[in-house]
Image (tube, rainbow, N blue to C red):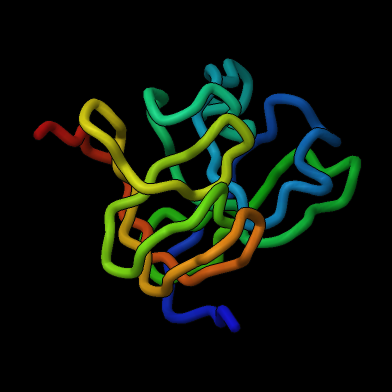
Length: 135
């Protein structure tokens, strides 16, 4: 069972309030900037492993929440998008779930636990900003 460890979380404005209401344990990406708040807008990383990721959504947020907590450094829980081996670098699939990196992926962290099936919640050490993996 995945548990939280020590982490650093920052609060960002949601690009589409309500869209993150059922996106707990998903990876987030920057989708633009908020000219009023002078900060980034975030959404679920729906474009896959080639996107620049910012961190992980800690838990489900209220459907009307405009600001959301995003873990940018430390141990967190993420839903796996497929089988993931422990101690491998992870990125996002098309639903913001953790999958193993391939060449060209932006790695956001390292899996601390293995997953044998999709949607299993695992512990991941997240470190933002991500770096591109090349083999």
